Length: 205
Image (cartoon, rainbow, N blue to C red; front, side, top):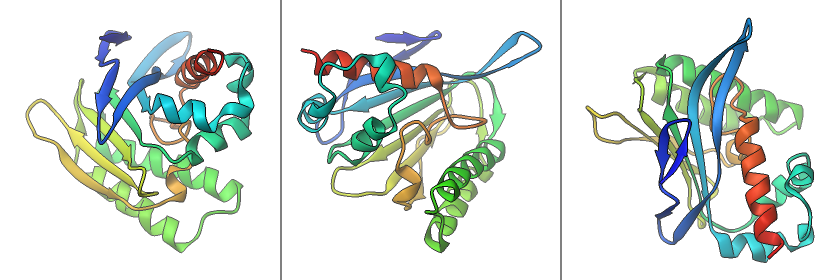
């Protein structure tokens, strides 16, 4: 197991194909020099497809990849399965998480002029899914992007309740692995750095 701030993540999972843990980190915020950690994140991808579709970045170091928007655009457009796992560290209301996620994704889509009625409806549906949930410590939210579909399948589970499915049906809402998982701004620099470093290492083999 790979430990991410005390939270265990399997090094590999299997959906329709084996997916490797290629990125992990946390979402946090610092208030008056006090670090508050919200979630631990794991990003699972197909190793073989990574090498096949990101050859243009062969030999680039992770520090460069982490700042390269075109690299991430190529990553998310690659025809492969993607699976994000978010484990709650600090308890939060599901309604808060849903609003934060909706706001962050909306702002990013508006910034690139890609926010239309379809995206608005999809984000509202996602926020509604989280509305009645309460994220206790160790609750798990997953975002799964099948290779044959451009939409996200969202699930939520706690120790007491079995997994519940949500309907994320917005292609553009899933266009950036730096955007989907997370809390306040739905961005985790530690996860982005880990993802870039690991993929950079893969491409240098």
